[in-house]
Length: 111
Length: 110
Image (cartoon, rainbow over all chains, first blue to last red; front, side, top):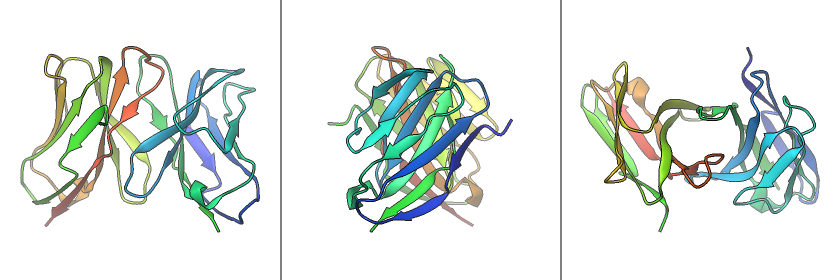
Protein backbone atom coordinates (compact mmCIF):
# COMPACT_ATOMS: atom_id res chain seq x y z
CA UNK A 1 0.00 0.00 0.00
CA UNK A 2 1.19 3.50 -0.81
CA UNK A 3 -0.77 4.89 2.17
CA UNK A 4 -1.72 8.56 1.87
CA UNK A 5 -0.23 10.39 -1.11
CA UNK A 6 -0.31 14.12 -1.78
CA UNK A 7 0.52 16.14 -4.87
CA UNK A 8 2.21 18.47 -5.51
CA UNK A 9 5.01 18.48 -2.94
CA UNK A 10 5.69 22.16 -3.40
CA UNK A 11 3.97 24.98 -5.24
CA UNK A 12 4.33 28.73 -5.63
CA UNK A 13 1.16 30.65 -6.42
CA UNK A 14 0.53 34.28 -7.23
CA UNK A 15 -2.14 36.14 -5.29
CA UNK A 16 -5.54 35.47 -6.81
CA UNK A 17 -4.57 32.25 -8.56
CA UNK A 18 -6.38 29.02 -7.83
CA UNK A 19 -5.19 25.46 -7.44
CA UNK A 20 -6.19 22.03 -6.21
CA UNK A 21 -4.17 20.02 -3.73
CA UNK A 22 -4.63 16.34 -4.37
CA UNK A 23 -4.92 13.65 -1.71
CA UNK A 24 -5.40 9.94 -2.31
CA UNK A 25 -5.41 6.98 0.06
CA UNK A 26 -5.45 3.30 -0.82
CA UNK A 27 -6.39 1.91 2.61
CA UNK A 28 -10.17 2.10 2.10
CA UNK A 29 -10.47 4.58 4.96
CA UNK A 30 -13.79 6.33 5.37
CA UNK A 31 -12.45 9.32 7.26
CA UNK A 32 -10.25 11.90 5.55
CA UNK A 33 -8.89 15.23 6.76
CA UNK A 34 -7.14 18.36 5.54
CA UNK A 35 -4.92 20.31 7.93
CA UNK A 36 -2.68 23.29 7.60
CA UNK A 37 0.43 23.86 9.67
CA UNK A 38 1.88 27.35 9.94
CA UNK A 39 5.49 27.79 11.11
CA UNK A 40 5.81 27.13 14.82
CA UNK A 41 2.09 26.47 15.16
CA UNK A 42 -0.03 23.40 15.69
CA UNK A 43 -2.14 21.64 13.13
CA UNK A 44 -5.40 23.33 12.24
CA UNK A 45 -8.28 21.38 10.71
CA UNK A 46 -9.59 22.87 7.45
CA UNK A 47 -12.18 20.32 6.30
CA UNK A 48 -12.91 16.70 6.94
CA UNK A 49 -15.06 13.91 5.53
CA UNK A 50 -16.53 10.82 7.16
CA UNK A 51 -17.34 9.14 3.86
CA UNK A 52 -17.91 9.65 0.16
CA UNK A 53 -20.38 12.46 -0.46
CA UNK A 54 -20.07 13.87 3.08
CA UNK A 55 -17.87 16.82 4.02
CA UNK A 56 -17.78 19.17 7.00
CA UNK A 57 -15.95 22.31 8.02
CA UNK A 58 -13.13 22.37 10.51
CA UNK A 59 -11.62 25.29 12.41
CA UNK A 60 -10.29 27.29 9.44
CA UNK A 61 -12.40 26.57 6.31
CA UNK A 62 -12.52 30.09 4.84
CA UNK A 63 -10.87 30.32 1.43
CA UNK A 64 -11.01 26.58 0.81
CA UNK A 65 -13.39 24.05 -0.69
CA UNK A 66 -13.43 20.27 -0.75
CA UNK A 67 -15.29 17.44 -2.41
CA UNK A 68 -15.42 13.70 -1.73
CA UNK A 69 -16.82 11.88 -4.71
CA UNK A 70 -14.89 8.66 -4.02
CA UNK A 71 -13.57 6.90 -0.92
CA UNK A 72 -10.00 7.26 -2.16
CA UNK A 73 -9.78 10.94 -3.10
CA UNK A 74 -10.24 14.14 -1.10
CA UNK A 75 -9.04 17.17 -3.09
CA UNK A 76 -8.68 20.61 -1.48
CA UNK A 77 -9.41 23.62 -3.66
CA UNK A 78 -8.04 27.13 -3.16
CA UNK A 79 -10.07 29.54 -5.29
CA UNK A 80 -8.35 32.91 -4.78
CA UNK A 81 -4.97 32.40 -3.21
CA UNK A 82 -3.93 34.88 -0.52
CA UNK A 83 -0.58 35.27 1.29
CA UNK A 84 -2.30 34.09 4.49
CA UNK A 85 -2.68 30.69 2.84
CA UNK A 86 1.08 30.19 2.75
CA UNK A 87 1.48 27.07 4.82
CA UNK A 88 2.19 23.35 4.79
CA UNK A 89 -0.90 21.29 4.06
CA UNK A 90 -1.33 17.75 5.35
CA UNK A 91 -3.95 15.24 4.35
CA UNK A 92 -4.78 12.34 6.67
CA UNK A 93 -7.10 9.36 6.73
CA UNK A 94 -8.33 6.78 9.21
CA UNK A 95 -10.96 4.23 10.08
CA UNK A 96 -13.19 4.70 13.16
CA UNK A 97 -11.43 4.17 16.48
CA UNK A 98 -8.01 4.05 14.81
CA UNK A 99 -5.18 6.51 14.57
CA UNK A 100 -4.77 8.90 11.64
CA UNK A 101 -2.32 8.25 8.81
CA UNK A 102 -0.77 11.39 7.38
CA UNK A 103 0.46 12.19 3.90
CA UNK A 104 3.89 13.75 3.30
CA UNK A 105 2.52 17.28 3.01
CA UNK A 106 2.31 19.99 0.36
CA UNK A 107 4.31 23.16 0.90
CA UNK A 108 2.48 26.18 -0.57
CA UNK A 109 3.89 29.66 -0.98
CA UNK A 110 1.60 32.49 -2.08
CA UNK A 111 3.36 35.61 -3.31
CA UNK B 1 -6.73 28.75 27.00
CA UNK B 2 -5.98 25.86 24.64
CA UNK B 3 -7.82 22.64 25.32
CA UNK B 4 -4.56 20.72 24.88
CA UNK B 5 -1.36 22.09 26.42
CA UNK B 6 2.12 20.63 26.05
CA UNK B 7 5.26 21.30 28.03
CA UNK B 8 7.98 22.09 27.54
CA UNK B 9 7.78 23.86 24.16
CA UNK B 10 11.46 23.23 23.52
CA UNK B 11 13.77 20.63 24.98
CA UNK B 12 17.43 19.90 24.48
CA UNK B 13 19.17 16.81 25.79
CA UNK B 14 22.45 14.94 25.62
CA UNK B 15 22.48 11.54 24.01
CA UNK B 16 21.52 8.87 26.52
CA UNK B 17 19.35 11.09 28.71
CA UNK B 18 15.84 10.14 29.83
CA UNK B 19 13.29 12.54 28.36
CA UNK B 20 9.76 13.39 29.45
CA UNK B 21 7.24 15.44 27.50
CA UNK B 22 3.97 16.37 29.18
CA UNK B 23 0.47 16.90 27.85
CA UNK B 24 -2.54 18.24 29.75
CA UNK B 25 -6.04 18.47 28.35
CA UNK B 26 -9.27 19.99 29.59
CA UNK B 27 -11.87 18.02 27.63
CA UNK B 28 -13.32 14.58 28.15
CA UNK B 29 -11.57 12.21 25.81
CA UNK B 30 -12.03 8.82 24.25
CA UNK B 31 -8.32 8.58 23.40
CA UNK B 32 -5.04 10.50 23.50
CA UNK B 33 -2.61 10.43 20.58
CA UNK B 34 1.13 11.06 20.42
CA UNK B 35 2.60 11.97 17.03
CA UNK B 36 6.14 12.58 15.79
CA UNK B 37 7.22 15.02 13.11
CA UNK B 38 10.82 15.05 11.89
CA UNK B 39 12.29 18.31 10.52
CA UNK B 40 10.91 18.93 7.05
CA UNK B 41 9.15 15.61 7.22
CA UNK B 42 5.79 14.04 7.55
CA UNK B 43 3.84 13.14 10.64
CA UNK B 44 3.63 9.64 12.07
CA UNK B 45 1.49 8.30 14.86
CA UNK B 46 3.42 6.88 17.81
CA UNK B 47 0.69 5.95 20.25
CA UNK B 48 -3.04 5.99 20.71
CA UNK B 49 -4.08 5.29 24.27
CA UNK B 50 -7.17 5.56 26.43
CA UNK B 51 -5.79 4.23 29.72
CA UNK B 52 -2.63 3.05 31.43
CA UNK B 53 0.62 2.76 29.56
CA UNK B 54 1.97 1.67 26.18
CA UNK B 55 5.56 0.91 25.19
CA UNK B 56 7.23 0.70 21.82
CA UNK B 57 10.97 0.25 21.83
CA UNK B 58 12.48 3.13 23.80
CA UNK B 59 9.25 5.10 23.82
CA UNK B 60 6.70 4.89 26.60
CA UNK B 61 3.37 6.74 26.79
CA UNK B 62 1.29 6.98 29.93
CA UNK B 63 -2.06 8.53 30.67
CA UNK B 64 -3.91 9.47 33.86
CA UNK B 65 -7.55 9.95 32.96
CA UNK B 66 -8.54 11.39 36.36
CA UNK B 67 -5.83 14.06 36.21
CA UNK B 68 -6.30 14.62 32.44
CA UNK B 69 -2.59 14.26 31.87
CA UNK B 70 -0.36 12.20 29.62
CA UNK B 71 3.40 11.84 29.35
CA UNK B 72 5.70 10.63 26.61
CA UNK B 73 9.02 9.22 27.82
CA UNK B 74 12.08 8.45 25.73
CA UNK B 75 14.69 6.24 27.36
CA UNK B 76 18.36 6.33 26.28
CA UNK B 77 17.71 9.23 23.89
CA UNK B 78 19.53 9.36 20.57
CA UNK B 79 20.11 12.19 18.05
CA UNK B 80 17.67 10.48 15.68
CA UNK B 81 14.94 11.14 18.26
CA UNK B 82 15.24 14.86 17.43
CA UNK B 83 11.80 15.86 16.20
CA UNK B 84 8.62 17.66 17.17
CA UNK B 85 6.35 15.57 19.37
CA UNK B 86 2.67 16.40 19.19
CA UNK B 87 -0.06 15.47 21.64
CA UNK B 88 -3.63 15.29 20.36
CA UNK B 89 -6.87 14.65 22.22
CA UNK B 90 -9.76 12.78 20.67
CA UNK B 91 -12.74 14.38 22.44
CA UNK B 92 -15.51 12.06 23.52
CA UNK B 93 -18.07 14.67 22.35
CA UNK B 94 -16.82 14.19 18.75
CA UNK B 95 -14.46 11.33 18.04
CA UNK B 96 -14.27 12.29 14.36
CA UNK B 97 -11.75 15.06 15.08
CA UNK B 98 -8.55 15.63 17.06
CA UNK B 99 -7.55 18.65 19.15
CA UNK B 100 -3.82 19.21 18.75
CA UNK B 101 -1.25 20.67 21.09
CA UNK B 102 1.34 22.99 19.60
CA UNK B 103 4.13 20.45 19.91
CA UNK B 104 7.39 20.01 21.79
CA UNK B 105 10.57 20.48 19.80
CA UNK B 106 13.23 18.02 20.99
CA UNK B 107 16.90 18.22 20.06
CA UNK B 108 19.23 15.47 21.20
CA UNK B 109 22.94 16.20 20.88
CA UNK B 110 25.65 13.55 20.62
